[in-house]
Length: 322
Image (tube, rainbow, N blue to C red; front, side, top):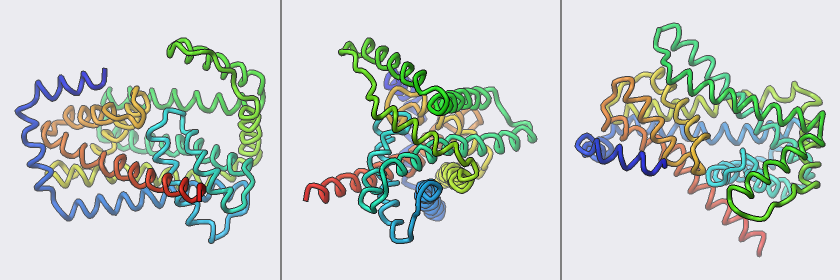
């Protein structure tokens, strides 16, 4: 369905889209450097998020940081290609922890903490940005819809965490029903949830909720992740001759992020692009400029991290095999 929408848009707007390659080719090098700087900040924030979350549940040494950084970039890549509510990234972080002698239960707790505050960091950026847009009378119905959908998804994840701590049996039953629905949709045999994995999630949730103050440092790092994402879209828009407008970049970033979460394809491929372009064009940006800016943004925010993280994952697997 996303592919069909993209094809319809491309066909109906083909005259405007002929300028996209030209806009990208003539992109301002100074703003491209700013885009690269925002990407480096984004990567550093992801590493800080995982490191501070782990430090909240176990001891983290300076010598552990390179391995944590590799695990963090690999986790971002796996979460981009696997629809798992962010849990696919636990595999590379568990491997990084094992290589540094950290207990798996503590690594799982730290990763769950990082995954939880990731959404909360986005909520902080969302609320602050919408406050600024509202004060200037620029908050649109599209922004409110995207924000409301994301808040609903975040509330659902909070409910799952509470169930894990207070009613493990209810969580197990919910997972069993989800697997039955998945089996019905995919026409596959019904798989029962792994009790060991459920128990691991319960233990991790208990450790996370025991001392809420430990969530503050990773929450700050998670907020920087989304701030860096807004800066990437802002720099990409300015690079192709679009308006140098942080508020507009924030609005497009929010809609692209929510579309990526709701999209049927892992990583939000197609859906995120449509969401960003829609937000920019509604604000009056020419379609060719909006598409060019979105392409630059998605290359920096999705494809480059995917390539780097995928390479890190392959390298780690070869090291284990050796």
